[in-house]
Length: 307
Ligand code: AMP
Image 1: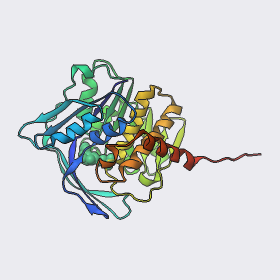
Image 2: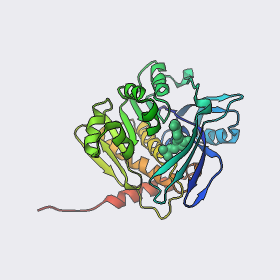
Image 3: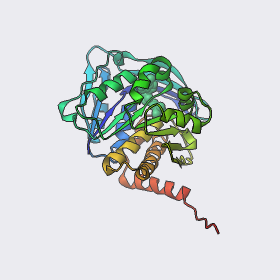
């Protein structure tokens, strides 16, 4: 079933203890759509870039059956740019620069063919823009997932609270969950955040895995212990893409299936960090994806018989 993805399509410049990149293609919606493309057959992208964005990067997305009719290219304007530097543990990073550029006046246009989508992924963007996408869809999708970050909590908290009332799932990292709730304990933070609107909350903990909460249950998925982590940028978005792509394809939004989706999301995140930018998730085979998911199954399987 069709999946609509909105978020940034961007240039990133990244510094890690292993190296540094000049401007490379990144952006929340880029990672989400690519990761989702291994599961969902129909992905409709809504975003905006400037005329400095390479057409071969758009072609790369189209090759993975991502529909870019909703990607606006603004002549005479510059693409959103973000740069960040990772600390030695790769779990934390500092944003060095955020240039909103073309994002500043972004007015998302939803092509007619995108209406009636069943699954909506609101990737990291200004909460008011995320809200406008919900408002511009004639029917509320069956399932709406929202991702955000501290940047928007700092500058647009009220708007974020408004859009949180409209979504099924919020995905954020542990630091952001603490900021949004004002609670240190992630269990208390989850209770508070669930009372703000979403039915489910996913807290991403980098190399320490991810937690899925609803008001009664909690599920934990580990991150795969990897020999090499090259660049964590986009791990959260690749997670979200695998998560919603799997749900959109299976069309089952029970808690048990959400648990499976968290594992597929974690598998896509584990690929994403193995190379800089989107390189690793541009061209995976079905076997590679299956093998990776199997590694997750093996990692957490154990037998205990309690007498
Ligand atoms: P992640 O590592 O999953 O948190 O996402 C990294 C991606 O988010 C990068 O490719 C950036 O281009 C994008 N990004 C960084 N800051 C923002 C922001 N304030 N709004 C939207 N996207 C952003």
